[in-house]
Image (cartoon, rainbow, N blue to C red; front, side):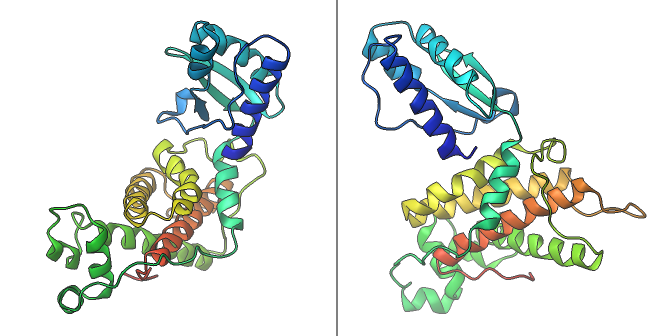
Length: 277
């Protein structure tokens, strides 16, 4: 189930509860689901019970319990828990990380470049095209000369380095005779999945569709930082005499999806995504 599938399932559950007269409230036109910040909070979370409680005049946790029972019976959902004042934490029957990665890898074409104004000539001469474009999308107060140095404090360098790192992993894996591969479930192979990384990957289609250049640039920074942390903790390539395993192939698929998202975002911003850096 993709985030859109989960959203539709939650909305269907609300509609069924209203039609069965378990809830007396207006059915919302859409339901928002988010990837929680921690894995122990489930795969997706929604606050739909809170506005429904206000509309129906009933306690939010009581409304959440009505929805929880119905949601837990839906195909593809393993468990639903109530948290806080009435949030619903949804755990899917199989790993959502694998579905997110597979969906991103299947996306055929990069997004259309954003229609951004060209940098001023003096800025182009001083920084070059990539850093000049990125500087116009950066928060106020950023030292623009920082964008020319290859160090961790340079957000553009981190994004482009993360992309180049994914390309290097794919090249090195190819030399070792294996490629990215995800099993249908992927739960075991991605058991060490990093919440921030997969949250950023899952968010990319929504953020790219918003066509907001500054927001997209900040998203790419978060994704690059999350990937580099994940990669440090979860080796993608076998070490020493170790043979490539299903875990290595699944992690390589995560790296490939991350590289594709970073390249897509940079392409939309008119910034090059080098395979070597």
